[in-house]
Length: 380
Image 1: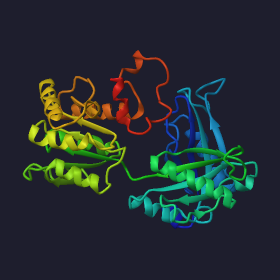
Image 2: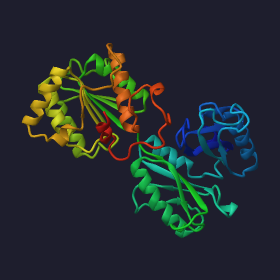
Image 3: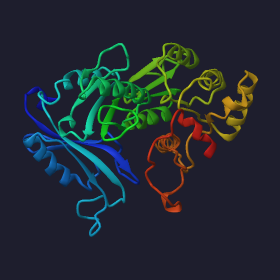
Image 4: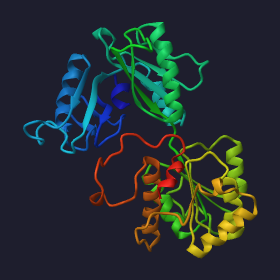
């Protein structure tokens, strides 16, 4: 933003499409400033040099480029991905002239308001390439900018809102004038949604470690406990907020306020029936991504019986990750937090939780598990 605010021009390379075992997901970007410094990454190091040179050129000429990078036929350590994947990178110049809406987009992101940016990355008419518009969730709110025609704007705005609701960034294909049955125009939709939430119930040492791990993974972390002597900001400095309330009451209020979604992670670490049974009774009936509960095998069996006694069905109980975490042999709070985070990641992306050396096939999954990633529980 400092470069844009100063009226200068930067070169920006953004991953818009990935194939096979690509190291970064669509939306990953690298910015080359006027002073030659670079920020960000598009490949974890494989093609950064080539993108840097091209971004420098595009910033100077103003002509955007869509460049594909894959494994070099002669030498995979030349300009290519040593992991065997393929990425498409769109390189453009960014300035007040080319992206006048950037300030308002940055304001939305900073305030936690969802916003999508749709950019033409390929078109038979080169004049269309680089055109963009800004789309917000409310269909009654007009879009900012234009791709080139009312028909194209209407089609892309509708589809961009769908991707924004899912938190997905990807390339959409249309006919040259936005025809849904056609090809020639490719539009990259970059969805910028608020960070997903992680709700940790139980103000214990394991919760402090998990709060640090959740923050590291990009979650907005809330720690909640009914005991004010334990639920303090000093003990949970990594959490975005610390709430003193009965877990089930707080969770029900958040659900009623529409503050939870399919990306929300709920971790119940109290292993005390008077706390975890009421909150799990609420959690397992919500449309959230992950619900896990800590405890021994005996605690788990007792908890399941108590949850059945309050009326939860086998289908609802099947959504519970308990005992929480993957089998890493974890003992300390920090190791246990890694175990829980690994379980969340595996279920979100459809991973099996096995050592990579013991399985064949792709390392990076192409897309995340759609809908609730809790549905992948059946794999375990």
